[in-house]
Image (tube, rainbow, N blue to C red; front, side, top):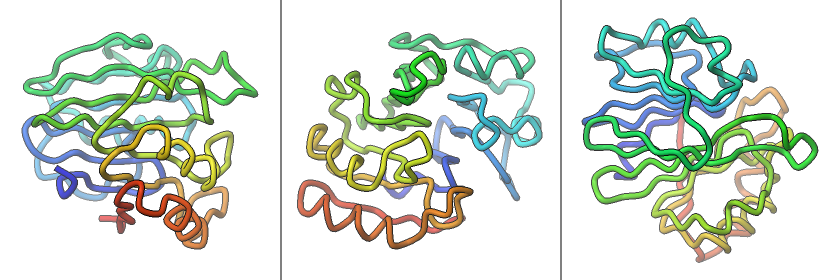
Length: 202
C-alpha cells in the first residue's frame, strides 16, 4: 500500500488504485483519469486549490470537504469530524485538524481505510488530544511548524500512534522554508518506532 501513496508536494497526495483518491490537490501537472474522490481538509490556500479540483474532477467525482473548505467549493459533500463516508472500496473518516492557537479553524484530517490498511492523513494540524485514539498502519504528518507539528512533535505523535510507516510532508520546498534538515531530524527522532518514508515529488 505504501507504494501507492504519491506525494505531489507540500500537503498534497494521491492514493493510486481503485478508488483513485486525491488529498488537498495542488499544482497537479498530469492526470491519467479523473479522481474518484477529492478530499479537501482546509480552506487555506496551500490545501484548497479550486483550479486543481476542477482539473481532477470528472462527472462521477465526489468532492468531500471540511465545513470551512466547502464554503469555497461548488457541489461538494461536507464531512464532519468523526463522520464516515464510503467511496467505492474505501471508507473515509473525518478527523479534527487544528492548531491549539486556533481550535475553531474547522479543518479536517482523514483516516482512509482501503485494502485492509488504515492511512491517517493529519492535515493542517498541531499536536491535539484527538490523535490519542488513532492507531493507523500509515501516518502522513506535517513537520513544518506553520501552525502544524514540528519535526520533534511529529516524532512524538509517531511514538503515540505506533504506525508501521510514516510519511513526513510540508517540507522540501514548502512556503515556510522547511527543508530536508527537518526531515532528517524527524527520521532520527522517530528511530526504530516506524519506517520513515521520505517521498520525492512526482
